[in-house]
Length: 323
Image 1 (cartoon, helix red, strand yellow):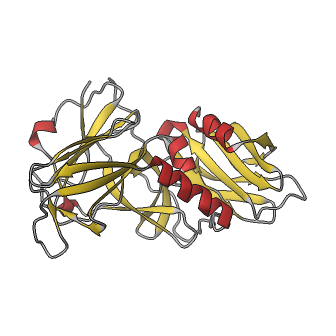
Image 2: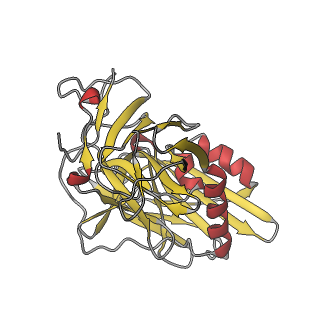
């Protein structure tokens, strides 16, 4: 059964679906986040390396991979092929990175912003994973129906679809919807009538075709009835060169990098009004790091002054994981 959406099952009330009105004008640019700072690039790369889990399995028999955060990857026997279609034999190394929470997304720099026909829009996210398979350093692909992935999440909806991610020139993730022809739903996991859930529940999806898997995300567009530009400011006299700023939206498990809009200002043009959010900043200086956490309710034309206090990277990770 071919469909374009990710299917969920289990048992508790479904998360609220916002209306389908697309209210973001395409001619308003989203400012570029300042992630080109070499130290931040190194920090994010190190965090991804540390978060990478590696498993080994026999290509002929397949097997199951269970991530530390609950992601399950089920590989069918004979699921792996080389780029030319030749079946893989022997042992295969499977790598998995899980970015399921807002804390994960910040520490790994995997924002939930999608490309909707040229307009960048916030996504409500069920979580992202990176899957990579290789044999002896040579990448291998997945055959049609060769993989079923189950991603646990506390935020979701039957409207969610599968997106694939690519980094833009600034090193920030932009998500693109995956063509529905690449997805099939395993009938064992499909229920067309019961959309109630227990938390955490799972997205089940099956990748179709000779696909090299990388970053995948279960999302849907955050269609809010009213949005506003949001601005966050850093104190006068402080440099923006070594500062990163994010907007976290807990209701959607969403994270958006705020782009530099002036010498001391960061912003994003389309933030849902009335939403509870947190502005998060991380600044590197000569003596270490400082951070800023500003819980807010988004109001029309909101401007948020940020105040930074000394921190460590370890403490910052604890703080973002508590969002």
